[in-house]
Length: 383
Image (cartoon, rainbow, N blue to C red; front, side):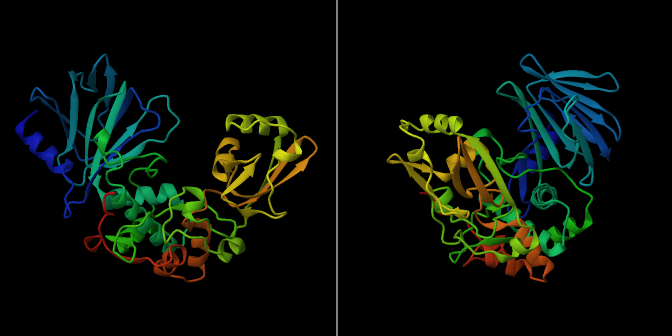
């Protein structure tokens, strides 16, 4: 790799307070063996370990594939090269590019910054190195949708930014910061929706912290059904700001009720997977109130079964439910959508529509927290 490209790539890879760089693994879920790279604006230089470079101009297509144990690069001009690692550097800071997977239904993504490509566990590792504030609007759009108002987008921007800084090393052992899938935050790439971009810009650098100025776990979900869940009831770990909150906003805005019927045979199979020996149907029906409620776990034949495991196994919308027996069927009647911890997105949107500020909204769902600049925040102490 040329000295110029090497030094430039180091600049993009380094995470500094003033630069706020982040490396995001693209297509983390599908793990492609081939993708297509096309400059949308400006032009790029592709660098190889040999020191060779290839210039790619706007509109020129480059196919990058796995070939045996190497990365294969083919350009539209007929250049073909093999390398262990390939880096793609924008020649100007405003250059953007498009990546897509041939034969995959996932939408193409528009990105900026640098890209590093190498093989990892049998597929292409595609790392986009960009700055956090450029990354943020795409994460907000993917996680919050495109329906405002703008104060709702400001709320999500602060939450998403807090998540990035709090989980900066989530994939540290894998050599990057975050992935673009639900394991971290979904990232759709650069976006065109101006209200979302404006919301991110107007809250630039703002994050949520607790009373010790420690970055919080900024959990959120789609709809709480009228009552959020405490973190210890879902994840066993208690946080003073992730407590159950009565939420009248989401109920008035968009109530979510659901019902799921599960054959008793399937329920018995689930209990068997938990080491519970079934004796009779009546004793294995979970005891719940007649109306949906949030319960951490159920004791069935002397064994505790977390509500979260029931939700996961049967793909229920939430853990906010009641259960009744109907012949050879268990009927789960519930409210809400998601794990229920932290901010309720439907409730937050309803609060924004009522004129509440993003400071009021986050304060409601994360009691005892406040918003400050990232320069004043810090990560929790290592255990």
